[in-house]
Length: 125
Image 1: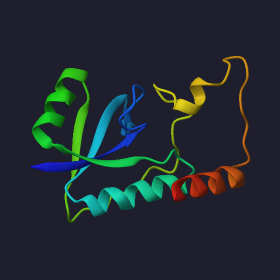
Image 2: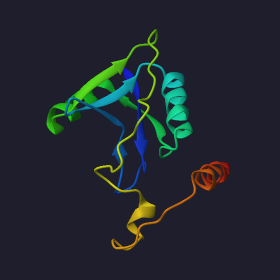
Image 3: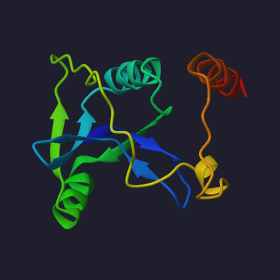
Image 4: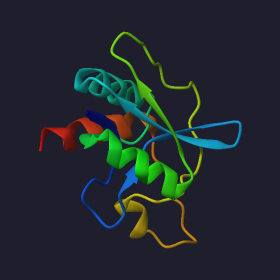
């Protein structure tokens, strides 16, 4: 069975998968329907989260990955409605490609409105 997951920096050396942290456990969220994954990705982006890519994967492969990486798996069924948490983690376990180019001593602070407009323009490319 195919499921859909949310990836960041897809097909790069710095690829990351979307997880929720609940009670200290990392839970990978997968969706039975691609449309549900796309909707959830849009909700994340609306919260100024990084823009994810929706990718399909065999559920068996994902289950094996979760076992090896000590992650839990939650497959969102077609009849369920999942909403992103109101708050996202401040720092991820990985950094985006853009963050790699910044010196560690310098932090970039970007106006949220400008960031949203930049993401929309980048998505047009």
